Length: 171
Image 1: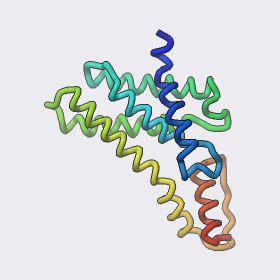
Image 2 (image 1 turned 180 degrees about the vertical axis):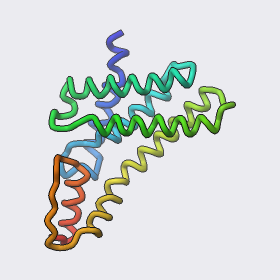
Image 3 (image 1 turned 45 degrees about the vertical axis):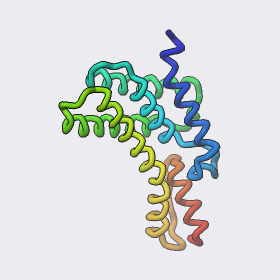
């Protein structure tokens, strides 16, 4: 039973390790893409879910997020210097998208809804994957040469944006 309980962690680790090898956004630090791995994990979770009601599916997603957050820190998959706040925020976005979709499709059967929800999470993954580049481009456009930038905390998006701005000649 413990093996089944840890399945989301195993799925996350698989996607996270893949992102370390192929994620161009984070390749400068070889840290991988936590959010992308989480979205792919939830997508796989929805498609493999045995929940037979939407309410159970929502609850399962929330419970899985809490479980993942706890285990990723406990097993040091996410360094202690990082937080799972992003994962929890993405979980809330996914839940919101699920509510939004299902409120329009009240007469569909659960398996059809799950298929659409997997597609929605896959679309969210694509959006999140390209978000760093969009933020970086806006960041580079917004700063002026010689600007002093104060960074509070650590963000791979900010680090990526600073590096990209430097590559574009910003000083």
